[in-house]
Length: 483
Picture 1 (tube, helix red, strand yellow):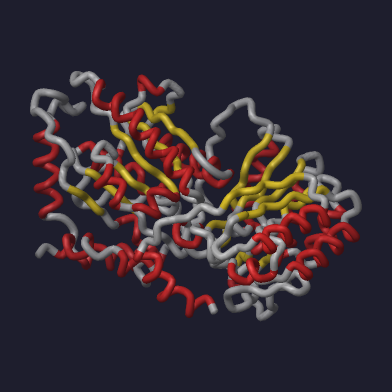
Picture 2 (tube, rainbow, N blue to C red):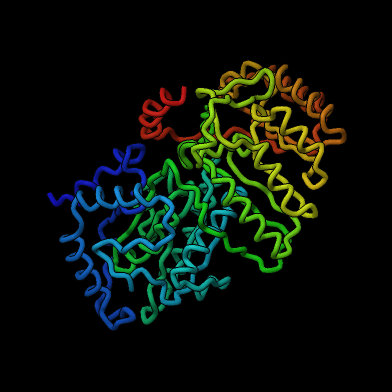
């Protein structure tokens, strides 16, 4: 068996291993999902699609050995901050990675992180020569940035794919074939199931694989299906400046960290977005500064657990000081030490432009030490609004959810916040119908709503999900390292 084939058939062994830094180089190709007539479509060079596929297959057969991946891993470790463009993989040429002004249509579903991911993905594609279109009918590439937090979110995408299937079938044979890709959390969760269930899907890219989009699209043009759903231990897209989708926007999202380590029992995020890692403070400040210069009036700092931010990018930040948690709260992982924390970042961001409003979402109640609350109180441009997800008012359910706090600790935190920040606006998330929840548990949640008197709330029925055997395997591997 060719060494490349061996690597491609076992990407999971690399997902959390020392070679995760070269995950963007790994290729998973499937057999072509449809036959293409040699006269139906010509490439820009005049070569038939069938000829392109044969040429690609021959190059892939003679493609890189395992030593190629090791060599690139060594190069990345020696030059971690190099902004230079990487050489194309041996099975592709530099020209094949270019967009050649093909038009991309992007649709975004789900949370604010997905909005920011769309801007990151478009920034990468724009630099590769793709054009953006808001007209679905003229698109050459359709990319759906997806959500997987609840079953309904995924069903929305399956329904959308059914609609797009008709569009792809009707595409005139004289034009470049329409390519459809699934990006984000749904691609990460379902992986090959999407390609097997919907043969019209050409491309999958997980949340940590957006840099790989030009290569994946180049592979797709050869008639293959392509996927990169490897998660990274360090990808934050710190050097990618998101491109605003609306030129007249007055606000923007700024991603400061990715992933989550909390491992709440109901949540899919650690499995679709991976381990928690934070952007360097300097890169965040630079992005906020540029947004201020563009005249934007508000920025929202984004993260799955935004206030657990911890920048360890510089050795001088790695002191032995432990993370300060909210009083009465615990974590599901070993207490983190060192690094520049959220209070430092919030302080620096708020100083860039005193007239720019600062918000952040979504936080976890455990990460509200006094220094964060005091800063919110002192700075007039930090909005006096805090999202404080409770999820339940029952201690029994909170324990089953692995939230790391009791109802009593949560209520004490609410009182403390209101003492520190008079007039603060509070919002929260709640799940009802959680596994094993009783009527009494539900009534305790209702009583918490009445006791706290939130300004806004987001309430959801628990979404029963199919258990993926891969998650159980990952949990066995990861949880000991997090305890």
